[in-house]
Length: 156
Image (cartoon, rainbow, N blue to C red; front, side, top):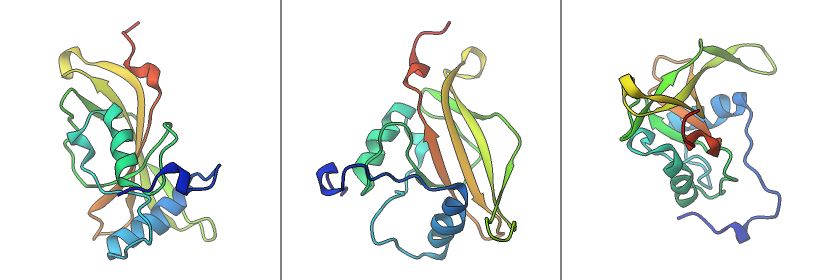
């Protein structure tokens, strides 16, 4: 169970860099090493609609989201349908490099949420990054949805 916001000092934020997400958090998760506090919960996000993700994050994580972003571990998969829409990849993969050695640590893919089904879907302003570790044994990802609440307004 997540601790209340009052338990944390004012101004405390969880703002990891990409190399911290891949090189520390994802690596530890794949090795089976447990964190002392839950900052990135595990959730199959495609079972949830984007507005529900922040509530789920705040229920599962020890550090609450400020409403602009949250992070999840999720099993790797190609199906990205949610009950009311789908996530679509928007760009090429971006290489994540170690800051001290420029070694390739992982990849980042960007996705955008589309509300509705394929033929009548409308693109929203909700974006997500998927991080993968460069490893043949990698079977998990870190998901970083970033929400712009205007994305669920009526289409232009």
